[in-house]
Image 1 (cartoon, rainbow, N blue to C red):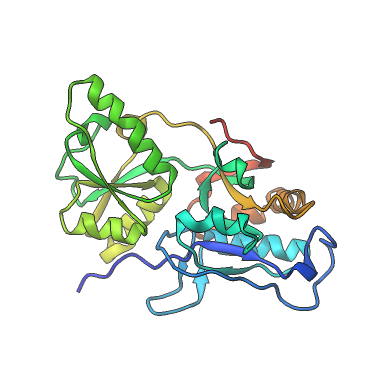
Image 2 (spheres, rainbow, N blue to C red):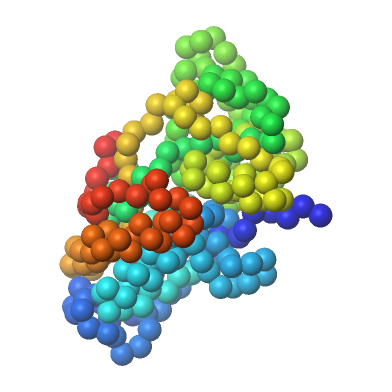
Length: 284
């Protein structure tokens, strides 16, 4: 029986108000921070469960969050939340920060500050062998594709419709799902020709799902269209003074001593590293 890709828990780091890093970022808090939220979405290798049925979380974001917390003298605890509910949860004060492979966009900066830590572009997940022969962006015109709701990839697909129109091709039929696992199931079932997601995640799923026999990837500017070089960031609450800067400084120290790259390398994605931790580095 085929198994879906490892389950993801959108990582949200939260602390008790009594132990805010902005008050004392270098001191070990008296008790672990609290995390509150619900829902889970598969998005390896950024965040996922260790094994099917497990509640133990692993992944790039989880490990990096723990390393940042250690530098700040606090504990980052992760819980789950639907992707399109992450920023509203931070704005509501339920969480202090979110780590969920979130692209730094100027629109999102209205809700949170983003501390940038990696950079990765979009890619297509397709059936093994790419039977639909998707090579350039307009190859998906007139086809059905899947995407996760509320993501930058959904916005990109909306923008790509214009290129189909300009070439006199039929529109892309976009099926949006709250979980990318559902988008992948649509691809498995033949309901869509491709799933648009991060190229890193696409490669991970293609290489690990069903021992690599089910999916392939199609990446590159010709296939996904032009994209900005905006990085991926940690969304940090604007309501906690000094928290953004504390996380940026801790992250930069991890970059400087090689710990950041070591974490990425453990998940076979060292190529998405960036040299400096910037705040709100979105280009669009």
